[in-house]
Image (cartoon, rainbow, N blue to C red; front, side):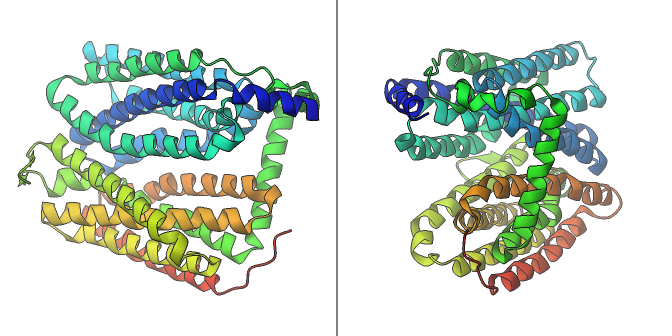
Length: 445
């Protein structure tokens, strides 16, 4: 096995920059096209229906499949060809998007068809994203992983800003069927870049006989895969609940997604209902159309997250060295998230709304960094993956479950009340995390 590891290390050191460039470029195109089309579809639903029930269904079909499929996406990435698992979902998503584009061009489109397409796109992401994260160590040497992951994060953040802006421009210029073809084009470009990557023969767990030997039977037995997946979830849950700080950040994350992030997905509905007919001239841009305002709403949150992330990376390592301080930061960030969600429901001035939107993004970024650090530093080395898997599952499920409550309410009561309620319910979550921060930290095993 040491000989195999040596061969893998040598193979990875040769040509890694080309492989990394191909992967990152391909993912940049894929992410941008998918995000542009996702925004365009969501805005079309909002502008056509203006109902909370439609937003609820769009969220369930657009988010829930990914959260469920991703539970199995990780084991699949350990057992099957990761390059194929990156390329195949993109091709399938491109195919169904072409069909949706044709249906819009021929005026056959319906909400039911859109929801089916959202489901397929979301499920594809649940397979693709774990494969991408697992594929990076297959093509990049260990000493370069931090740099490549940082670049991948920059691409993701830039996409969050560029996609809504580009979608707003396209919505005002071309019909939706043409916008859908943007994702098809970028998917083909992205797949082409990834297809050109030559994976080093000795690199990757799933390319070695030793790694596959013990998993060969399980890889062909779906029941065994299910049993191991749920066994891992159970062990991870038991472990996390025994550690106060880990329990605090995982449950704090999940509950915040349930009571605060779920209403935040109704901001598109809030904008169309409460700011219809209200224009805002910022000098460098004039927000007049509905798509302009929806794009500004998304940009405000994204810019805030970038600013918050920059602040945390600059001062966080100096001020938050101990886990207790990190827990305080998580509690503070969650409290500010709750306050800003209340603010979004209260304010009626579009400029003030966008400022509060930016602050919400800053507060969200303040939470994320310390949350991840607590899970990384306080988890036993053998449990880190399961802890993060549990956090991902619960936080991803929290938002659509919250939408089951808040979205129908938005059709019964004023939507502003939904935001105020969600914000108020977030404050006890912050207090809960703060209370757990004062408990002792067990030594890592």
